[in-house]
Length: 224
Length: 144
Image (cartoon, rainbow over all chains, first blue to last red; front, side, top):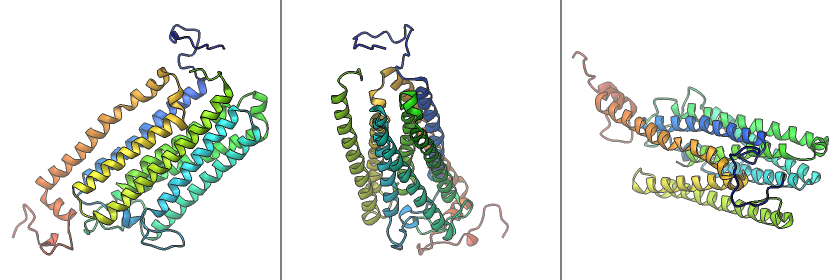
């Protein structure tokens, strides 16, 4: 496996992986690409419906509550959620890195931090959904007036909000489950016996993708 | 790029890179939030300023996506072959976004032009003193 830095590598002449990554990681990349198209389709349909509507609720009026602090605080709660996800992404990078260095204790530490971040994000989302539901918002019911003050005549806004953040939340949930499995496998020395922590790298890719999707969902729903 | 060379140096650089990217992502997020807040406070009416800020936010969003994919997901350190198989298909999004948003817009324009009833129903602005209740509008084809 000596890949000495030859200037002219013939990657396609056979005998080696033309991508120089293991199979599982490559397939994870392709899965994430297909998932990106799923999320992209969701967000683009949201965008085209919004472009086709005469009125749309103002996100700063809809999302303006913070638990314990009351109303009138636009962008506050979602910034907290965004930072939780970014930080948990960073701890995941550190877990993958610790895996490269085969430091089991560090892997465990950073995986636990990542899982805590994921659960914190899910809790925030659960609170926000409950709060909006109490205000009368759900699939098929949109209590929020349009930004221009007119009454909204369709539930497009809430339908898209709950579907897309729900789909993203489901991804976060599966990411947390995957990370918990990785944690158990680390604690039971599965990776030590295998001799490498490459599986954590794949879980990490998935987790970063969840963060990546949130960048888009957050921008489309809360900022634009 | 051979990752087996000088592991100590690699690790040090990796650690620095993680810190750097974390700070970049946080700063970009804070700028986005500040712009969102500015838009909410200072530019409540739709117009050029609002669209300009929205465009800036979209550019910042793409920058964040780049940093996450290139550094956290390590795609920037993979072989060009792999990068291309991931990035080239995603170029479809360029067409996807332009086509669908344009279609949504033209659907809205057509409906507002040719289906006046839908437009009245969609835009009853109570704040507008000249506002006409939809019930009082004579629908096309109705008898007196």
